[in-house]
Length: 211
Image (cartoon, rainbow, N blue to C red; front, side, top):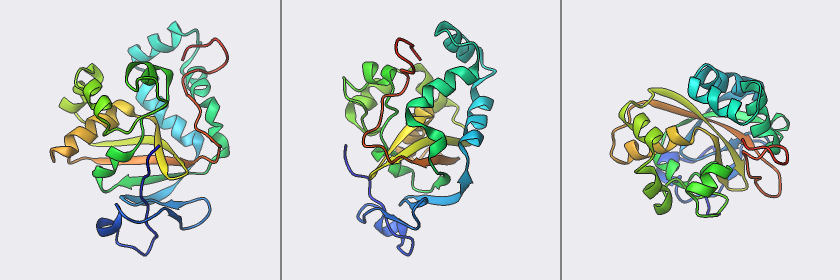
């Protein structure tokens, strides 16, 4: 995967976010250019935010029931299981420079791999193939027409890259609106520091289970 650039805490992010390397302010809290650190968060709190946005929606209920899950909790727990998210430190950042969305990588899920990445595990949100796919995506287009003023994405930091875990449709909509200077909301991202050797494919769960 390509390189996302990071800067030390005493640098001016606005001027140097595209040129400096990733450094840690401390071992658990990376200082990420284009993002402004806000606060620490737990995986349980992240799941609670996901629940508010999904658990009562009929389309998501049909989604997890079709896949054999008895509840939203069972479905989302299985979805994130390959990351072992409870073992990671998580922090919330405000996305101050929306241009950094272009260099973030899309969620490595079976659905996105099959439909959008042409067999690769992930691609950058600004990648031409991703953008071509987005033009015809109903969810992304619907969010683009009515974007959230406040929203929180979820991603992991692996080596020097941020890979989304949740919020793909919102991230793509905000990315494209921001490119035309048409997004005036407040987007944040919960980032977990992932230390595994490679990022797993999500949306596979236990063997034979479609998520």
